[in-house]
Image (cartoon, rainbow, N blue to C red; front, side, top):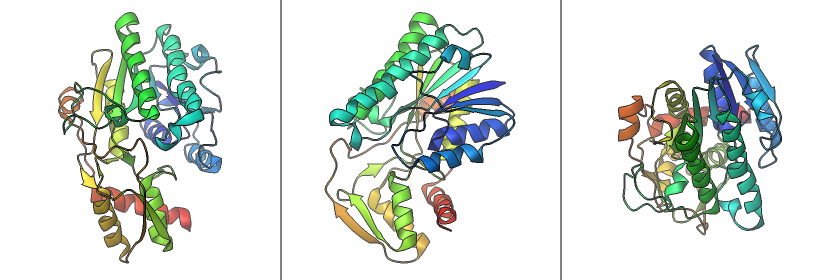
Length: 314
């Protein structure tokens, strides 16, 4: 079995590579290793996955020969893209359209001509829902993103559905709800919180902390990807991947404080444009079609990420 993983140096992409290699896949990883965050962290992710079954290509999806990259590939895990709600405003939007929309369209064009492809799994986001009309939010509820980032993720998801309906490309889109765990990006909340807590530093918190999030542990997300790739479903299908935690950021701080057993120094700042007040996804469809459900509690997941953060500080 051969798989292509885009964004293979990132948090989720490298975690998928690790799982596929353990399962006996031959894996081709592609990543342009941008400077959105420390390049050394991405290089470290690649080195952790060094294996005779892993070929890594440091290339941009908008430039690489994708037909060659897809040669003999049965499964594509498309994790590449420009992350981050806060940076997607203003002139940086050009980066988001190029990396999230144009790159996805180019990959789908190449996939259209593949004779071996069984499934292309696209990493969508709960950001497509914006401030949802109801909770838990289902896949048929109206998407209404409130950030340029969310707009580009939804556009790419629509492209996957269009290529499925018009050309039979076997796509499945997974709407991730706030993924956390070991290898999480340094700009994401849990990594920032846990590092500050360990070092006794001031911990930045946007808004009041009353924002509610549905956090999903990385191992559960990886399993959802594998199931989405290997389970026969209708091309163009869309699934929520949600951890079911539904806790506030203040609740998260309480959990962290209990783990480190010392008071946190919290610096509360203004809310950021494009951040939603609440997320919460229904997992009925993915449970029915893919037999997937989250297995890691928010308490256990944060504890696991704390141990990882400690290891990076030694």
